Every structure is written in structure tokens, then in C-alpha cells.
Length: 94
Image 1 (cartoon, helix red, strand yellow):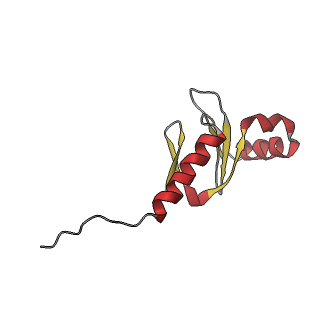
Image 2: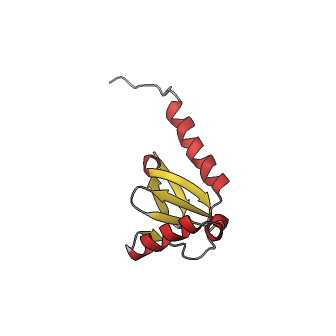
């Protein structure tokens, strides 16, 4: 399934490694170092028009998202719920 993370970015939910609050960046030297290294490798996608509220880490790219961690979590959980629903649509016979 896919998750819309803001700024016209849609990613596959299976690729998400972590979603962290943007406010944690300044308090963790490990996160700062990871972002520095990934920026050097051009693997960071910054938000365009909005302030970042969360950071979505995937297997290949790090995205800064204008959506909160809570909102992204709800979207991810919604996809999980939809996947568990059975298809009750009527099949048409020809």
C-alpha cells in the first residue's frame, strides 16, 4: 500500500523504516550525522512550502514531511485496516 506524506510525495508503506518527530533532530547527534551524510549523497527530500513536522526514513531516501508523526501513523494504520477488509463487492456474471 501507499502513504501520502505531504508535498505531493507518496511512498510505499513497506519501505518505511521509521517516522520520527522533527523536533528530535537538534537533540540527537546521531540523527544530525545521518542527515548530513544522506544530504551529501543527495538522498534527502526537504519540504518545499511548509515547515517540517516529521522525518520519514525509508530504505533509500529520507523525506521531511509537513505532516505530524500522529497524522502519518493514522494514515499508515488506515492502510493496514483497509488491507484486512474482505471484498464484499458483488461479482457480475456475464
